[in-house]
Length: 145
Ligand SMILES: [Zn+2]
Image (tube, rainbow, N blue to C red; front, top):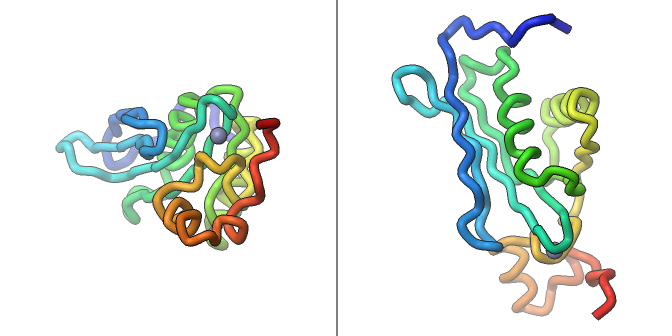
């Protein structure tokens, strides 16, 4: 582990956090380089009542993948739901190592799996729910009704 901030051989990156506009919408953390070009994006969804969060996707420009940008962006996303329980969508093989590193550094367990509450299902889950297939996607909500 280094002592200073990660080196940025290709120039500094600006992180912009865009909170979800509605309860069902996804929030984003966008990474732009000095020229304003998009070099990374993290998408996430939050449920404030249940204090749950879900990372939907992480993309970092291939030429900028060794700079710790993904971890910085995820840290910003996790801060939007501080104290929430988080998980992620299905993790690819390289993704698993990444999330293990995030877990170690941020102290936030990030397992992949089904949404931690039904409100995080999103459009696909909602469509399945309308078809009566939600059971296959997410267990019943365990909150007392
Ligand atoms: Zn919820």
